[in-house]
Image (cartoon, rainbow, N blue to C red):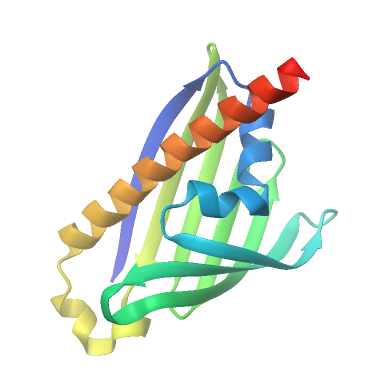
Length: 158
């Protein structure tokens, strides 16, 4: 039962390079993504454009905080993909494109609850999960926009 949700936004006055710099900074991830409490970079290979990353996500309720280990891959200034296999399959894809007066940013998240919930997954209302993910993605997009503008104006002032 893969649930997919996508959101997009336009960030005025910044380049894809600036947005990419924000998204690829592990220290900023926990400030941008609402459920991520902390991240650990296990290893990074800039030549292969891939890294191994652990995130600790607050899921609330019975689940508390879940440790998610996954692979991060990227194409400079164009795309970042974070793929988690355990404890549940999640793929988050950030796509950046140059736009008039700024950058268009699209984020698509797919999540499969079956490995974590087993047969109970069929009782989970997909719309409820999709709405929750959508709200998280909207919060994340606002966070990326805010953080990128702050960083860009700080650099400009320096």
